[in-house]
Amino acid sequence: MRCIAAFALGALLLSGSCARRVDLTTPTDTSEPRATGNASTPAPTTTPTTIPVPDGGQVPFDKRNRPTWLDDKINKYLAAKPENPPIRIMSYQYKGQTVYYESAPCCDQFTTLYDAKGNVLCSPDGGITGRGDGRCADFEKLRTNEQLVWQDPRK
Image (cartoon, rainbow, N blue to C red; front, side, top):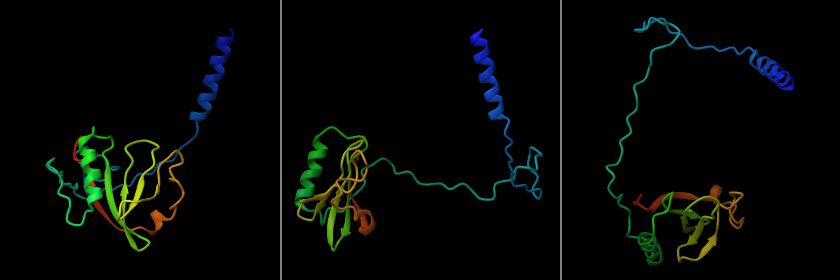
């Protein structure tokens, strides 16, 4: 008997929550009849955008101004198992100097920000809070001139 009463109470609660009225308005365009004859759905007014997809080849990166320590780090990544998501290294201008931002290989790990000589400055984001180690909390606000230096091309 208790099961029937509980079921009835549950059904009553659900029916009450579903009984709310929701008004929905859709644009109408009767100027251009559609094949369905339904005037409440307008015909598309724009053409679909086609975004070219790269052919899957390796993306060429500018290696001219890349520091030796960074090339060594990239070679270590290429010698190891690929990470998911792929490691990315970006360069920025931050507080008057060129810095290199290295993404984290996965979940809740700190990212790393290096100066031009390869010294670790801070971890701008990542970690459990997503806010990094707090030593460069202004990095996202003050960084400029973003450039992709390298991204692991392997899958």
